[in-house]
Image (cartoon, rainbow, N blue to C red; front, side):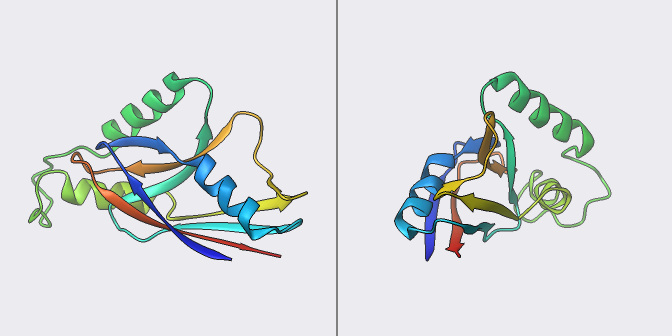
Length: 135
């Protein structure tokens, strides 16, 4: 089963969409297999991260923002604004696809794990995510 999800972001930061992927797994009716999640963009990424305490997400966002700063005078790819090249670097440092085992018809995520789209651009965007569930 392959499904394309549309994820609306509010701008930069981690946006959880675990429930949408879980729904895809239920619809696929696969007892044991693999769920692959892939984002079709170069300025955002995917991650599995802490889903209980929002401070973990804030700390991750702040850390990546310190690591890759906007406005570096060495950037030449700036046509779409000061967050353009930093967003590409952040996406290159993180993941654009995830592989999650399916066991007994459910994602094999840990208790506190959630699936997130990590928007690296400052403005809101509609992002396309492909989910494949197979045995």
